[in-house]
Figure (cartoon, rainbow, N blue to C red):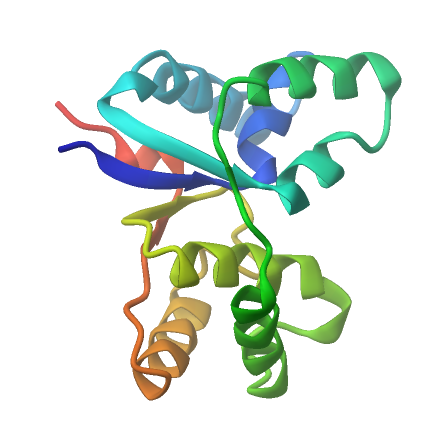
Length: 156
């Protein structure tokens, strides 16, 4: 059985973006491409939140992102997801200005995916934040997914 992975918006954004001149971003783009080429090891999922975020900005880039997302199953944003996102916001795990990030986390938690893969290291893939996410999940009787970057989800 393949591990289930929630693909957060930053992943398709890095895949669809023009090559960056910033060395760190360029490295992230390369790592993301390498991970993406081997994505068939996983069962990938997105949410309507990812689709909506990916549709923003430059029209050509948005079209490239939409094409990357086309074949990936979409997880529902039901009441349970919104309630858990609200719980994360009330616990100040994620600031209100980043409520979309709380929604990404909530979709992954509620749908019991194994991994949430992202390059958002400010509000999601951040060691201090992960501890808080896990605590809120435990309090709700839920398991947190492993939150990681594509680099951390590489397999030999």
